Image 1 (cartoon, rainbow, N blue to C red):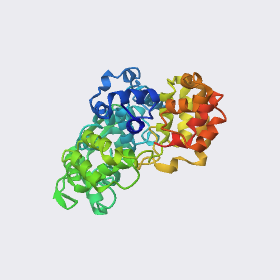
Image 2: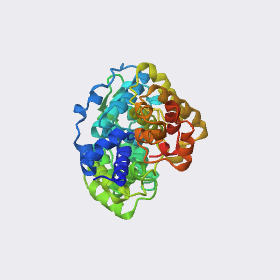
Image 3: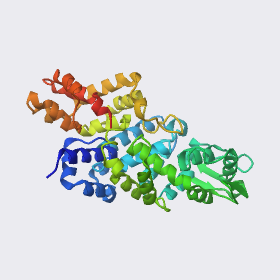
Image 4: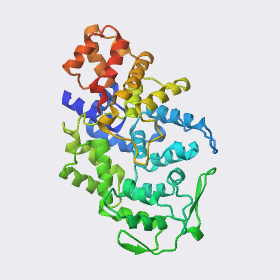
Length: 421
C-alpha cells in the first residue's frame, strides 16, 4: 500500500530527473516503485523512446544562417517536451549549463547541435571522456578562441575555464598554471564548415610546461589526465551535481563521501547520479522543493503536463517567453552559465510568466480539471501539475476562479508551489 509520503518522494525524484511531474507520470512511477524508477533512469534506451523518435535532430546548414538558430531552439524544446524518459534531456540540459557555450558568438547552429549531441551521448558516461572531448569540441573552440592558439600566441581562455569552471573550481590553480596550460592546448585548427578539428603539430608548443606542480610536455590528452587526477576535480564535479540537482544548501559530509565513492577514480557520471538520487539527504524532506525551477524547467514542465505539442507556429511565442524569463537554450549569458535560485523570480520576468501561463492554459488539455466538480478542481489542478499540496493562502486565491478551469490552471501555474522544484 502506498502513502502520501511515497507519492511525494516519487514526485520529487521525477521533478529533479525531468521537467516537472504530472499526476499520471507520478501514478505510473508509484506503481513501479521508487527503486525501479531510479533503475529506469539508467536502463532506458533513448533510441526506443517514441518522443525522441518523433523529434529527430534538424538538418542545419553548415554555413552561418540566421534562421537556423530558431530551428535549433525549437527542436530542443520539442525534444524535451516529447521525450517519454526525460532524464537524458535533463542531463544534457545540466551539462549545457556546465560547459556553457553560446550561439551568439559561435554563430554556426550546426556546431551547437553537434555539441548538444556530444553532451547527450557522453553525459552519462565517464567525466574524463566528456571533459577531454569538450576541449576540442568545435563550438567550444570558437566560443573560447581556442582554434587559433599557437605556441607563439597562446590563447588562455580555454585553459582558464577548463580549470575554473569545467574541471577544478576557483582556488585550485594559479595564473602561472593558466599560462602554462594555454601552451599545452595550442596547435588545434578548426574547419568551421565541416566542423572538423585537427591537430597541427607545427603550431603546438613543444614544452615542457609546469602545470599544477607537474612538469612534462603536455598536450590536450595529458592535460585532461592531469586535471582530472586532482582530488579537487572530483570534489568539484560532485558539488556541481549536488547544487544543481540536490540542494543549494551545503552538501552533508556523509553525502559528499558517498557521492565521491560512487564517482570513483573513473569519474562514473551515472553512478554519481544514482548515488545522489538515492542518498538520504536527497530523499529526505529537507531537499524537497529546495530549488527554484529554472525557466526551461518551468516552461517544458507545463507543456508536458498540459499535453501541449509545440508546433512551428508556437516557436516565436515560446522563444519570446524563454527570452523574457532569461533562459533561452543555446544562449547562456556567459561561460559561467545561468544563475540559480531566487534570481529567476524577478519582477522583470513576471509579465513573461503571466503571458506564458495564460497561453498554456488556453492551449492545453484541461480535461482533468474541467471534468471535476467545482469543489474538487483545486485538488484536480494540483494532480495535473504534480503539486503535493497548495498552501492555505494559495487555496484561497484559487477558490476565487475554481468555476473557470482556464483561469484556475493559469493561476496555479503562477502559484509559489509551482515555481519550486
